Amino acid sequence: MRRAETMVHQVLYRALVSTKWLAESVRAGKLGPGLRVLDASWYSPGTRQARKEYLERHVPGASFFDIEECRNTASPYEMMLPSEAHFADYVGRLGIGNQTHVVVYDGDNLGCFYAPRVWWMFRVFGHRTVSVLNGGFRNWLKEGHPVTSEPSRPEPAVFKATLDRSLLKTYEQVLENLESKRFQLVDSRSQGRYLGTEPEPDAVGLDSGHIRGSVNMPFMDFLTEDGFEKSLEELRAMFEAKKVNLAQPLIATCRKGVTACHVALAAYLCGKPDVAVYDGSWFEWFHRAPPETRVSQWKREKA
Image 1 (cartoon, rainbow, N blue to C red):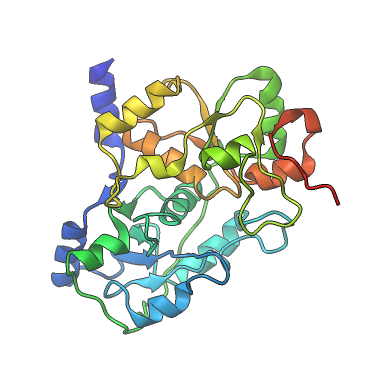
Image 2 (cartoon, rainbow, N blue to C red):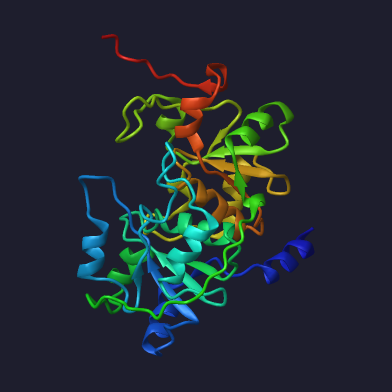
């Protein structure tokens, strides 16, 4: 089994790059059609302003990836994937072609928050050569690497997007899975939101709680206090502690399909590249699913 795992590791593209590697690539002038860097920061309304912060300082040569623009804005659910054509057009304008190595980071204080969602988006649209900056912008700054306020103006490229449906799950598929139990289901939100003892942030008419049968693995636990991804041994032990079998099919869910991608990333680092993300996640499930499939300790305040 160990040998088989080693072989898998050799064919998987590296999901993480170090700040040192990126700093050397920037210094050597390697950014261009073959290597593009994206700032994928997003913050809750009324807190930080991602685009404004990007314009003030970012990794030299990085473009701003606006997740609010690169999504299905017609959907009633939060942060749903855009169409193939929309994604292809959006990333093509950022100078990304099908041969580009894409490195994604964000400026969150945790070290990494939205970057894995963009990593997964590239992969779900058929792009293999994408990595997350381990440690994020927080550690890029802490280590004293260069920053600039110069906006990037990459030469547009042609990107062909092909949706890989194996990495994506719909409401109907997750509902069917409650009966078939073919997939394990992992929820990456905090324990309080999973149990329904804490409210969902910035939400109107959305109780907290979880999909029946899901296991809780809060995404923050995949990161060290310094904002780096935990070691392979620690990640493996975390899945084992929750009795999640990485040799079996797995779906990740959260509130809107963002932090679920941390589960996909951690599993990928453990040699499992096929974790599917339930894009609609709890937000869609709460509004569509039969009440008996929602588990929650949430008590609505009586008017």
